[in-house]
Image (tube, rainbow, N blue to C red):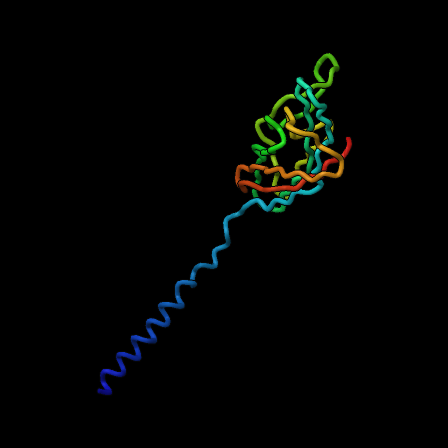
Length: 159
């Protein structure tokens, strides 16, 4: 009987070592990834007069900081208060006229930031379904290429 107890004890010790060993070699660092922080999110106030037939538009602005080691891209934005949402940039054309055009994405470099601000990159909110009153808070959902969806509360204020 003593001869069988020894192998049983060895089997138990081996199992214990086996159960502990899966962590060995798993100290590999996680692959580099973006580490995004969104700050200063706000939306320009807009009134939607009763019976208005022309679409009323507004814009959203924010700063995206990437504290990670790899770039990310803002590729879309969702906002339930508008019929259409697009990423835009403001520019001055050859005739000196200020205009806007859609962009496919906004680059957020590693260790850097992307500023969406009046007169530059911004989120166009087209065809508002209701007013945006100063002091209100609205939910916007940012879609990033790597990070995925990020929900942000933006405060409505005047330009």
